[in-house]
Amino acid sequence: MTRKGDDIQSQVAAPLDPDLTWALAREGDVARPVHAVTQDGLAGWLAGLEPAVAAFLRESGFTAEAGRVLLLPGGAGVSAAVLGLGKGDGSPWPYGALPFGLPEGTVWRLGDGCDPAAATLGWMLGAYRFATHKAPARAPARLVPPEAEEARVLAEAILRARQLINLPAADLGPAELSDAVRRLAERCGAEFEEVEGEALVSGFPAVSAVGAGSHRAPRVAIIRWEGAPDAPLVALLGKGVCFDTGGLDIKSADGMKRMKKDMGGAAIMLGLAEALMRLRAPVRLLVVIGAVENAVSSTAMRPLDVLRTRAGLTVEVGNTDAEGRLVLADLLSFAAEARPALMLNAATLTGAARVALGPDLPALFTNSEAVASALSAAGESCNDRVWRLPLHDGYASWLESSAADLANVGSRPMAGAIVAALFLHRFVPSGIRWAHLDVYAWNDFARPGRPEGGEATGLRALHAGLMTLLPLLAEPDRSPQVGGLGG
Image 1 (cartoon, rainbow, N blue to C red):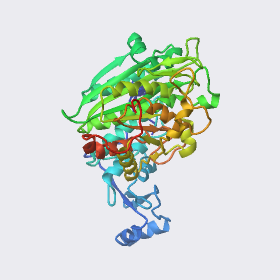
Image 2 (cartoon, one colour):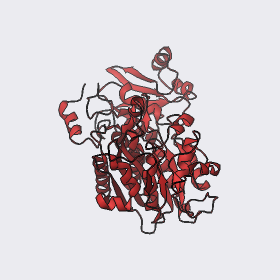
Image 3 (cartoon, rainbow, N blue to C red):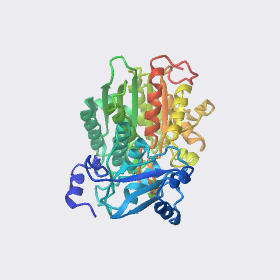
Image 4 (cartoon, one colour):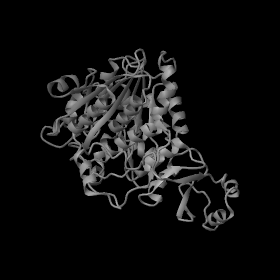
């Protein structure tokens, strides 16, 4: 069954938000059970079934490999389904095969062997398709949702992030991205502020310089949220480059093809903020999104221009395609003025990180051993892994400039992700915990739970890690740090 035209039209009218109900049924809907079994548990599970059903499974070649879905016959047709979980590591991804592995329009409930949280997350993420401009070929099967509030909130936050990343740049410019920030603030009862025009030029000069070449004016969108009166303040900062041509150092046609996703860091930070606010995390939030377009025109910044930043440092533009770090420099300086207990930023920052780690593993840089341990452990536990790379001070001299306090690119064609992180760290005052995630924010091909297109890489790891860090954030960070501003 193809989605009706009026359903699609409703999404075209409000393209910032995906359909969050399409995969879910209602309590009371007639639903068949879907069971889940691991490879190690298969023999025991088969032994407990009726002999005819067990024989059917064996003769069908079902071995419980991850993501394999098999329908079970009954007197009136299909009576149930079984899902293979593979080794059973708690991953949500096998459940992501169910929405389109089960018959269209059917309704299901969780049966034996299912983890409610992993199943809810995997099902909802697996049912998502970008449907703003083209109707999907079919509707997913629907799930009667179990009691798994955190999983459902995380799934909805990830789907909103995916939707923003998937939107073409014609639909999502700086104004529209700022509007998405405003809508999030309204949904969650937070304060919203937008900085543009002359206030942006004076307060965020590097952001203004990056956006100077576009007719779509840059802006900074800010959320402030008080989750608990005396809770630690956490700053979430996102690179929101809605399209990146590379500027006057223009990208190749192939290199520009997916640059609508260059605001992926902003989308991930907004998703993280949504999860924290909706789950009432005991934290105060400062969310800062630099919404901008890096375009080519007579007013665009030029190679070897020297820019002023909010921190007062001057930066020589060695390459106009290294614009994301300029945006984040001003955001970091702004957030640092509030002396947060932790600053987290995410950005689709360097191709070097992808060469080193591929599309699925975000590169993690941090000045705090406690933050590194918490985020790495959280990523392992929730199957959303991050991989730490070093803030190697030995490369800091590569950012030296004879014309300014520093350059925005390194003087050598190596260690690009590390050099970019070192640039950002120059804008982090000593004594403030900081972590930077260099993400790809895209699935190049479809897998269960991960359709081709935008992806909120690292969002679940950041959420889980931050929740474990909250007790520590109330205390000064005594773990070893590398000095930033003032260090």
